[in-house]
Length: 334
Length: 78
Image (cartoon, rainbow over all chains, first blue to last red; front, side, top):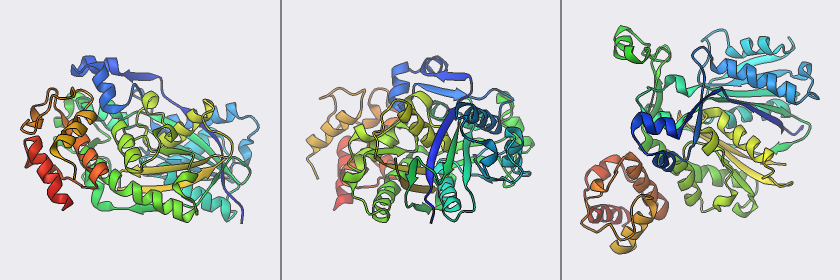
């Protein structure tokens, strides 16, 4: 059986920046307090007409430009993960496929997931490589949470950020992808949800009137019960961690680094405490990028690689978790 | 379960904006300066990570003072 590897990662952020100074003025909260509450300095926002699929095309173009040795025509699978599709149909992956000029023999599929999207998609990619259905998979994770956050909602605005990542998964080299553990608990759906974003309870005239002053929130409004999301994270991640260790025949001391979905400073801090792990082993890009939903893990991995923080022969635990509730995790080894 | 004094010390350590020695057992923790939802999240996370006790929003709502919060946590450990 072929092995699957994360071969390359590229990232992209839109131009508009929301920093703590901006939030401090808008919400009359000291800048230091914004950071203490979130662990974030900088968030990125798409412009009015810029969508998650545009970020996806931008990160794809950047990927091929920065990695000229990767032959675009050899990509035979495009996975596009987002919670912000252009249309219910056609698949947004097909539109991105066209704009990137990928080969017609490349299949393009949407993976409509959120915070756990990267690790969930990685499960699919690993299986496709191992069973030799795909040889080179371009896995793009891209999201634009800023467009579904109410402008007056300080908590969500201070956390979420728009970004995209392109990850090449192949059978060649890079970070070998290990065995996964995962789970789902749909009873948590109401605790993090984008209301008015689909066929169930679509927006109506009352909605448009209610949100008229903030542009109508025409593609939905994110609502989050932060307390329940925190409790969910602290409840499930320890089980997820021990399951991954068991499936990969590892012990805690074998793990050199940890990359958690960059949910918030408080969630990462207390997961670190609950797992009783060295905080120096926890790789984070939260301060400079915010919570970028499904792009957060590849961004943290890319940042750590660019800063030469990851030593050769390292074993890294990666875990995605959140909206759904959905969660999954694995080990990657370079 | 640790003593109420140690519990208070742990709370003070977790709250970045609270000075050591400023909290008492009879302090209404919601009256801490700049109290906000973040403090509630920190209490939930602290109690979960230290004592493996999952407090609900209603558990918090049913307490006012730090002593009541301590008693609530202690009752869930037993």
